[in-house]
Image (cartoon, rainbow, N blue to C red; front, top):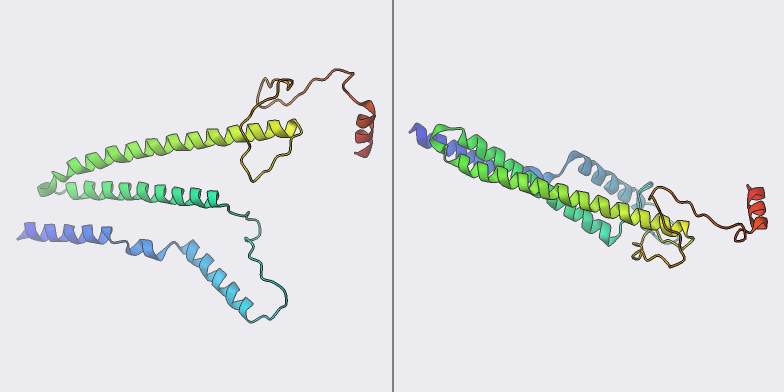
Length: 195
């Protein structure tokens, strides 16, 4: 009888952990932000003003592009997968601690391996993204140093240096050496006087 009671208690724990009751409510921070947005909308409904309504991001935040929204969804999905793997691993380890259910520890070992592999994959993806962002920043800085127009919202085109462009020795150094015949002294004097 005690064995069946233990299995019933573990089954109830298993069902309670699998049901997404806590996840449906959201975090306290997001509910506070949602409440503030609702109150702002409610306050604005009773004000009669002429003109057009323009939807703008909050002060200090920038516009989100579809690419940014896709990245945020991808990050959220990765975070959910990582949390799900961790929860399932801990749950199987706890279940496997009871003597009649030691066989469950084999599944816990499999989940630990999956968790480690997924974490390694996430670290590798993050390193690749940071390397890509650094390369984009270096290309943008080179284009700005060369005097080419740079759009900060759009990704820069692939870097193709013209044949007469000076070679960059180090990414942190942006020095262009010119002959004295190439320098317009009057422009330099005007620019120095403007400061």
